[in-house]
Image (cartoon, rainbow over all chains, first blue to last red; front, top):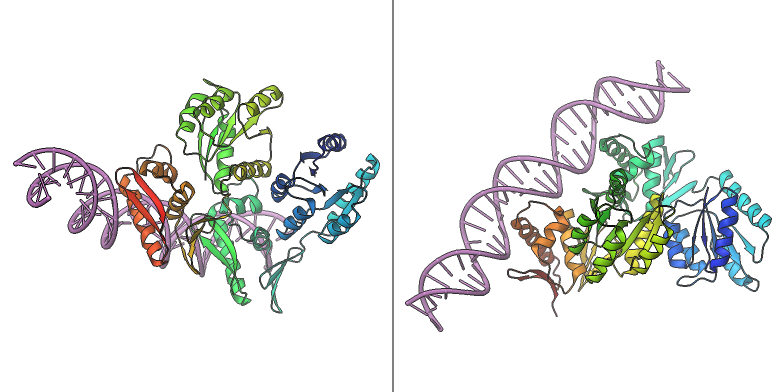
Length: 225
Length: 225
DNA sequence: GAAGCGAACCTTTAATCAACCTTAATCCCG
DNA sequence: CGGGATTAAGGTTGATTAAAGGTTCGCTTC
């Protein structure tokens, strides 16, 4: 369970790190908004502890940005007294909870557990959207303009990867890593096969979304006008 | 975007190479300090990943040397636990960041992006601009005044090099190093061919940017009035 | 400063090679 | 057995390289 702390008061960040590590979380701490954003965008964290007042980029902007990128990691905001309006703004922007400084260790841990539990119950990104298509990663159903069809698991995983990475080009290696695991021996051809299947289904649905090949680089989704 | 790895554990170097290549960086890896220094002095790299404990010449000395030569390439040090004093020494000598082994892929990539951004480099996801043209190095699309066309990988890499080096003249050797790797046997003619391709595409786009030949020196971009 | 020469450069083309797409067969596991 | 996963293979496209002929440029010589 990996937690990212974005907090400019170094002492507080240190203290939080210690507390969380003692409670068997993996912790990274950074001290400004830009670095926090860079880390958060990696998507490797299970939870973010986010201060609002931050140098370089404030917490609200950071939060908006990662939500805009489709990252659904739970976020708990750390707020000082008198930042109530900021707190509300944060919740509006997709924060899951907030905790007012100063707070007790017990309260912090409880809220973290709660946030993680909420995440575990409601599978994040259940309905993924891009252009005019919508993918339900639980039921593996892909729908577009009323029409709907079922994908098989690998198709869904592959499309999910493309949809969450949005504008970024995704290499076959990354796809293999996601669908078959880190040091799998699977051939590139395997990816190509599923890309082909997906294209066929997108065509069938008359979707305005297509999978673009960037030869010798990878694939990227494109929503056509 | 070209990265040099100086790391004596061959397995780790291999793994890093794979990870970075998957993320569309060009990568060279060497396994001792002296070779690392020789490569780094070429100045063709956009970032160095530098281990501290190295045979022949340690990372700190290497770092001091290249900084003494005026090379400002961002450097991220790879440190093991218990090398804290070395880490501090490294930061004092001009390292930009450090990352403690073991580290996650996401963390590594985030720190690389952060280091490149701090140095004012254009992060690979971004669109590069020069004059009235814009190059997306991820999707390999070159656009100008609404028009857009696709480049192939080598064209894009070549143009990227020209665009990032802006007013500086770039030699064919540098281009070969960037496009085909450090000790490639590729002929100059090969560069000329791609320069030719690029010129044709720039003309097609009606771009006010052209590639200028500096005979027996190299090429440079020029934005015309 | 004109002529001549060679080096560097430009462009096009064609052959080769690698990447990619698709279909279909096969494998595997519940 | 049946659905999904994987592999195999042929065809197609596109990328890369090498080669060759033509052009420009800079230098030397007269």
